[in-house]
Image (cartoon, rainbow, N blue to C red; front, side, top):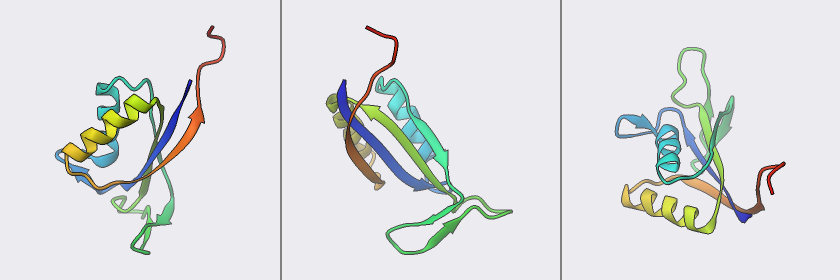
Length: 105
């Protein structure tokens, strides 16, 4: 199948409602029928503002988080529509990919 790899970049301390942005993305992807997504945390990085963000010993709110998923055109459109409806601003990359599962016909 051909589609997109969507990767969203945020920070541990950013939230939407009662969830972190990363948790919200995972939950919405599941609700929209996207078959899988992965959340990864990084030790450190910097964003558009040029500020360094690190996982501190006592404080993790600035820790960079990435949520990645492979999706169809339709699933990408549905997810971006939800993000827009919720008024969220999240940096992302959208890369064309081929995806599937080995061993399936």
